[in-house]
Length: 175
Image (tube, rainbow, N blue to C red; front, side, top):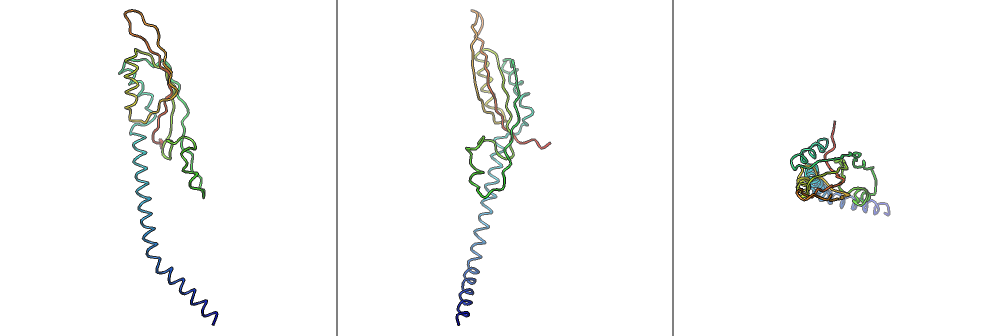
C-alpha cells in the first residue's frame, strides 16, 4: 500500500510538470525572442559606435582634416591596437558583463586604436580642426589634451600648439 501511494505521488508530480510544460515552452520562446532583440540592438549600437570607415584610414582622415582646416600635424605616434578580451565561459555572468573592468566602450567586435598627435595653427583653425574631429564617422575620444600658445607678432594671429591622444573605436578588421 505504501508503495502504491509513493507511485501515485510520483505520477501526480509528473502530471503537474507535464501540465506546466507548455507554459514553460512559451516562456522559453519569449526569452529567446528577447535575447535576439537585445543582440540585434547591440549590433546596431556597435555599428553606430564603429561607423562605416575602417580604422586603418583614421590617420589619413586626420591628415585630410588638417589640410582642410589649414593646421599642421607636427608629430604622430600611433599606439597599439586593443581588442576586447575573449569572454571565458564562466558561471558568473555578472563578472563578464561588468563595465568597470577595462574599457567600457571596448566590446566584442570592436577594436581601439590610439594615436598621439601634435597640431599647430591659429587658434581658430585648431578649434575648427577639433570640431571636425568630433564629426568623424569613427567614434573618437580625445584624451590627454595640452594647449600651448606661442607669442604672436603684431601682424600675425596667435599660434596654438595642441597635443592630444586620440582613441578611435571601430569594427575589428577581419583580414
